[in-house]
Amino acid sequence: MSQTIRATDISLHDLETKFGLQLSNDDQFFSEWQTDLPEITDLDKHVISRVKESYFNLIKYPPLLENTVKMAVLGPLLNFAGFYLYPLHTKSEYSVKISNIDGDVIVEGKIDVLVLKEQFWIMVIESKQAAFSIEAGLAKILAYMLAHENQDKPCFGMITTGGSFVFIKLVKGKTPQYALSKVFELRNPGNELYTVLSVLKRLEQVALSEK
Image (cartoon, rainbow, N blue to C red; front, side):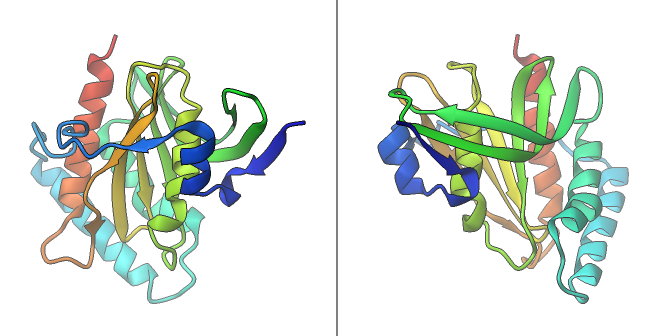
């Protein structure tokens, strides 16, 4: 008899033992977040600076919930990265279900935002409340990314609390492997949202080059 687990209850240990997921320590496995990053325009910088300003205003009035993070921070980023333009499109609250090889473990849940090119998954996005940490969404988003049906092409992910961002790359293959970028924090000096937008634009380029 199979066991059904909600994605919100899954752990990294579960993913490793039941699905064979492995963390890659190869620096070249996920180079897309740091190499060949496109320049962002002055208009991009102006809008993204306003997004940062908005975020710090909003957290003065807690709680800053997931839907507000999506509206105030994630929406503008995806728009200026080009994820709303053809041939890409997005879906919200996308239901997924995955099972391990033996079929005795089933994980069910809903992806916050899914970016597709035709029917192929490009990016899975998990948004959390500002009070949460990035770690709170890691196992959940990896479970969703494992539902990506294309074995050989990478699937990218991003977790954001509005003030923190991390990118993920997963390749299923024979043994599913994943790696993470550094964590970008709005509290750091400068404006790391510029780099977040640049990474998103780079991943959009990767998606459009895939055939």
